[in-house]
Length: 225
Image (cartoon, rainbow, N blue to C red):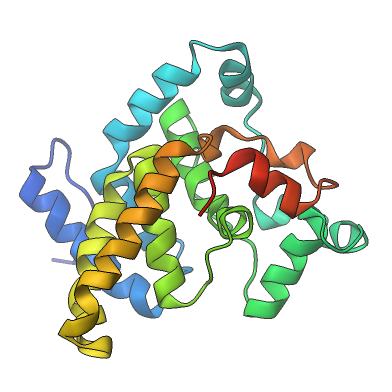
């Protein structure tokens, strides 16, 4: 009998199955963070309920309903990177392109169909990740990534961030030793609290803010670090 090429999430999967598949996906994403299959798999395993609650909340406001109905997108094939690069230095559009070039990566793309509000929010979370780095100021090295995960846990309550942060602790101990563990956890706690105090970043219509300075947006959207 032929085996499936990729692991799939069974209907009504147990928590154990969801965590097991998520851990497998995270191992893949450690070496291939842009993987277009395993990224959405983590979302499906851990955060369908989170996005369901978030969509329900968005539907209670005019701006939220508009976002869910219009479904603006930041996928690479929808972006005019040349035009954004021509914007003045320091603007969101210009720095967005610089971010990709400095890190040698491309904007997120996926072929997963978007049929529901939950599908859209799951995709939106993935494609705004790089913008979150810009507006929060957290770096793209492993430590910066973990600070951003702590921030979005406080800001959005995404469960996948819990698993990613837990996965990071033994890696941090291996690299920096036990003496750094308490300060490391303190930095994660501070980032989490900053996320709690900040504007909910997923609902921001970044597509209308390309000409705004990143520094101004950071002050407007994010609590002080």
